[in-house]
Length: 219
Image 1 (cartoon, one colour):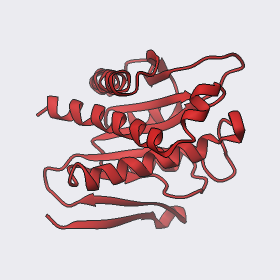
Image 2 (cartoon, rainbow, N blue to C red):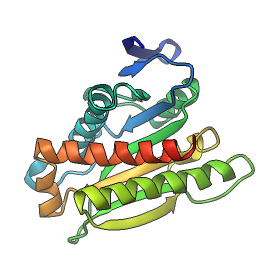
Image 3 (cartoon, one colour):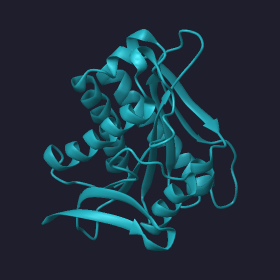
Image 4 (cartoon, rainbow, N blue to C red):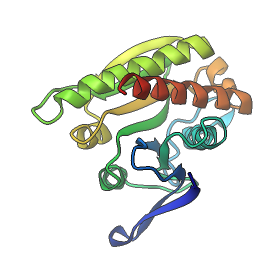
């Protein structure tokens, strides 16, 4: 199959949303990787001034590279941003719905006033008629990601959690959706972890392998 560089823009929103790598295929699963924060919204700021918006951009970019270089373009992957720009939450949701995404994974990092550490995954905290199946599928997806992170990274597993975050609420009716907190930037060990390119790549691989395990189990 021919690999192509795809560029998605919402003209009616006057906002260019993403540049993505992928493959054209009628049977390819389409995955939106939501790179959290950006631009004026730095997100959490941790040890050594490390910023959440920069960490998640590196992780998201690595997932795109892994898909192309190691997984041979197995999935059709879109990033909500590929640079340091601010994108409204509603525009991230519109992108996923416009693309008819099969999965949506939002990347974030945590912060805490104490020495908290570990990875945790969120999906929507309530069932409705149009979300029940996708919440159940989101839980299955989240457990695969947590298992891979624990297996490959030996990072503390804080488990599957539930919340009413906007992207979860708006996208769950359309596809399985996760919000992933990859670690605590305010924890010295985990903050320094994300300063190392090889560790960023390891986190991206664990997330991507979890996604891959989930999708293969649904074949």
